[in-house]
Length: 483
Image (tube, rainbow, N blue to C red):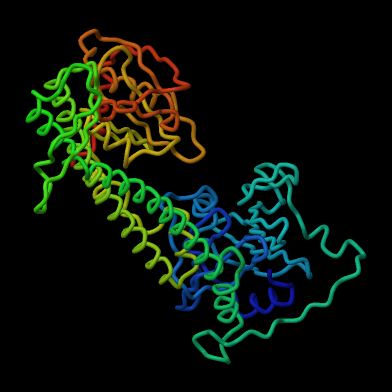
């Protein structure tokens, strides 16, 4: 529920903003911004939220998380109104539009905060009403740079039947108990029941996100454990080979089965075993076939067990992450954690150390290179997702190169050329100085059944011809992530 006009008036009265200096503007999310203001030795953080169903302005007594990357509107405010002084702070009639008049030096600005659930916005204009910038740029409303916004001209202009509103009775969860300010009570109320930014809603989102990941990891572990049980019977294959070699004289050409004593059986009484034979193979070749199956199974068992260990560790990390998210009691911090992936290590050091192969960070893009079959396979299994881009030299054995996808972004041509140069350079075709390569999203790769480790068959692939650019490779070397 958003604030009504009477509540807005009470909040502004308690804030007593005229005469305050704006010291900083921070934007924790697209629709949430905070102004730090100072007056007579007291500093306050004014929260402005444009979230549907929870539009509001009030003082917040909780820490406000900074965005990892400065967002556009906060940067604009810091360049124009920060260090300015608030001359006026009032609501325009009962329209739920707050106007702050700010002067800095010889300039004056109007900061309008429109707290309408279906059309909330923050708009900065000059004294003439020309829009300088808006939190939400809405060209159809003229709320974009160069447009005009002067809501004072429309205030009270329409004769519409008005609803009666009252100031809500809220529990005194502020620092002053039941006698706490309305700002304190509103801050506590919205932390618990503030729609999309309430703790209850955010915690439910955290549960859904983490439990979805835990379900996927659990299903993968079940499949891996089934493979482990299958590979666990590998010892039988070696025993079959030994029994065949011990009974070579009893096997006649064309025999499809061998019935012989199982000298590996435990217990007192002898046991007869029946082993399938290939009528086209000699006994020695048949025994070697079982030995080869045994070696593959043993090797596969070690790989599956390593994947199970990694999967169990990942499951523990997600469980720990959920526990810490649910323990966070600041909804603004929790919202940021959910948006950024939640309690991950800062991009880089620990994660980069665990990642096999070579890694290069080119601007905001991450490129990964597997230098052999084992690293290619490890990157495929644990470090890339369906929309990440895979590149590989055509007609030459060599590295897999991956470009990590960024949400809502298309891979720029320069990044594709970077990855293409790496794919040719780390292949057997590097001495040619140029070559063709395949590229396609990881989701279009299919593992080759019974093929060597890391071997994949691409579909919907595209072709790119690359001429090795030594200058580009030197630049990439400077962007290489050291481990």
